[in-house]
Image 1 (cartoon, rainbow, N blue to C red):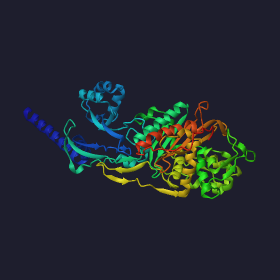
Image 2 (cartoon, rainbow, N blue to C red):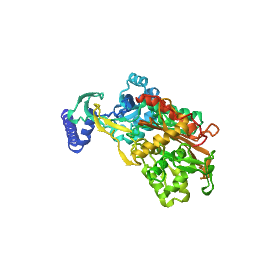
Image 3 (tube, rainbow, N blue to C red):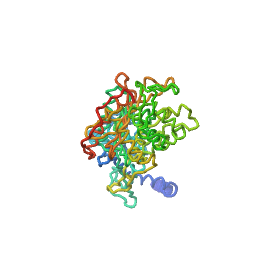
Length: 576
């Protein structure tokens, strides 16, 4: 009897168990199949990102200025880590992390399949991680931007952020071309999360970014950087800028600024050092503006070559103007520019009048951006004609009452060297795909205007601007074997405290080009706030730097020296 009762109980209990098991199976099959299926798929499938390689930045002769290289990074898969506390304790010393911080990363979301622990680590750290053999902590490859020449052309190249996104310079402006497109792969994994099978229908390959060929030439860039660094150091200047351009195409061969920075570790430098002053910082051009208004006066037929103007013996009382340090009487048109007479230029301004002066500024591109493909470009400042006064008539012709960036100034000077044609400055020659095939040819010059007639431009170079270097304010730029043309300028800055013109802060600038017969390059060097006790005129602080650049760049570009008969011994003038 007891045996029968026990059998019934056993059968009943087994029935209840089987019913419960059947109910649980039905629950799993009907009520919650989707979450469990997802969990199972999550355990055996992995999505692996395929990072696209960022395109290179190359100089005009295909030298690599910026590239991306593979480096190891450390990640964790919290989902498969059985003992997060032990994993954190073992891995933290290797990664140089606080164990508590690492532990929190591992337990913050246990369902998470991926979390970064350390990005772009050294090969030694990567090897140490491998030796740990902590299940759930591994290595993957990432791209890291590398600038092999350090500070060379830093302000043109710019830099990238942690995710290789462009933040400044060409890296930022051409982000769409450079960054490429990431791919992905779905793989079947074993219990230890090791890929064992790729699912080809779920594979999307990465598309590497395009490489950009810049107009910058690394050799000329290096020479320009050395020249401005030397000038800045010699004259204890706050900053300095140099630009080298091919006037025929607008191609920028060099663009240098001091202070500078290393894009490999840009965050170690102050923001001020990372600013591209060549395009962002407008200032009064001073006497470097005189060639533009002198050529405009010739163009408008208000003066002729050899015409004599009386320069008031150095002081024009009616206009409250003087020629610093000089008492010029009669000067020819050419001598007004060669000797840099403010009074002579003011008299040309009187002949032109405000409307034609304003038209001259427009013709040479002042008051608007050059359109160069670099971020942060300023348009400078040219006041509306309605705001001009009678004083503007005599001040604008020698570079007051308007501002321009160094690039605007050199672009206008390049127009004179290019038979009057104003060309848009270029920083990019073209783009290449991952196989090195050309996908964009951007080297064709873009003419944006005809500032002056070709004959006027040739006259200004041969009859006037060569004289500036031969016997005028720019004799420090004389170069044996070449006929150099140029113009000096010394501009007074605005005092930031008073808002008035400063008598202690100056910018010394020199514009130069060569050879005068068929100009191949034009150069600007601008030295900001040099120590007055050491020199501050453009002919003193900037002209020697331009000479150094021309001396190195011309032979490098294949322009050989030839015998030159100079006009006479140089006469160094105190002002410009």
